[in-house]
Image (cartoon, helix red, strand yellow):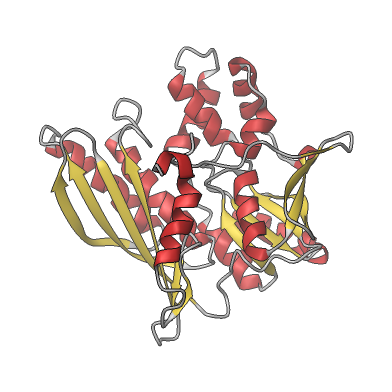
Length: 336
């Protein structure tokens, strides 16, 4: 069987089946974006990693090394944010072709240093290796969270509201602009959308607030797309969900880019991925308080986009009330 046939999530299932079902001190392990570890201290240790591979996640022509450094750090900070935690230490493994300029590497690390510093963390070590042609940046981030404050993805309840910080789909629009630089858009729209893709801003303050409130029942960040990541929450929680498509926040910039590309902005918002917004669930009666709290403290709006249901899977409710089974299931590294 080939990896391309089984797909990313099928491969993860097979790997998980080979490893111990339960290890001492592991609160959350394989199957989550962040390992949550009990190290016999007052706080849990959080551990996450992500990789950026040239030709898969980026091209050197489309992103500066400084932006790449900011990006690889930010997407790891986003994972810690979704647990309500605080980032602390990072390790970087870097594989490089010999013809890369030293200045390029220095700019990469400047970006990582600045992004981790914004999150209260620092790069403390790593590893270097040679590579024939492609640059590979593997970033591991450790953090901490109080046991009573960390939020799982597996504890959503039937009847809970589904909420999303900010707006989804803009990173997908930015990717389209990078792929199609000839698209006719205003410079301000182009700048905003490409920045959203190249240098995402993790919702760290929002994640802490939501977790500390004690009112959020499940949470994760949006890396695979709203539908795909809500499906992850549903599968982990043994529930289903319904998304009200009319409730999704579609920014004017996203609409303008989708129109220029001949695409559906709703499709980009639902399945685009790499927005690194927070997707979370809470009791309906707590929604007004949570929205007000986050907006006043951070300036970030939260939108209720659906509800957790009994059953399984994610369905879309269109503006006319029609229920639709979405074809988009989120990003799969080996399935496309």
